[in-house]
Length: 258
Image (tube, rainbow, N blue to C red):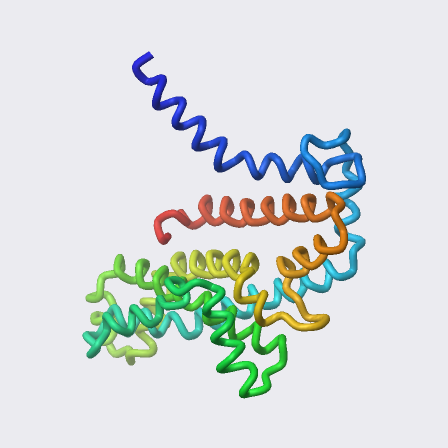
């Protein structure tokens, strides 16, 4: 009985965290024609309908493109930045770390508005290019922080030994450093992918006619249609994110890097 309050608090916490997930699963499996919970009977028709909606397919492909290539670009920029911040004493390195982390600290609405007003409009970027740059900038802090965390666990004298044995700095980095931090790099990619794919505030400002990411397309769909297909799609996306994180944890020990 002494542990009863602890179990009650734990149960309430799990209900708060898992409850919305359970609701959208059953709401998407409703046999009725309107989004409701509890559902009016159970059916998989709305889960199947998700794959027949053309706008969802197109926005899904765009979100996948942004998540994959935006994260890869962020890693190409973030890995050298993390290496420099960890291996060298740079003037103003704390200020640099703060600037790099700015997209995480600043609310997404402000980031989206700033990019729209001072980058997209003056330079006349296409919607796709604007979204790509925005998603890359949003993922970059995660790339730097996760790779830095992995690099902190790597002994610097291993790289120095490779240099003393005849390697150039680039060869030591590619043959010694990079193989030893690959777990952190993969973890950064997965975290960046999930973050980019589910991004809403910035994408809301930068999406345009006929070019929308999947979360923004789902919002637009709900403005004109109130059937359970959005709940079904939300459940499928939640399962996808959970599967990615679960596999990453099993293979990489994902929690060590985030």
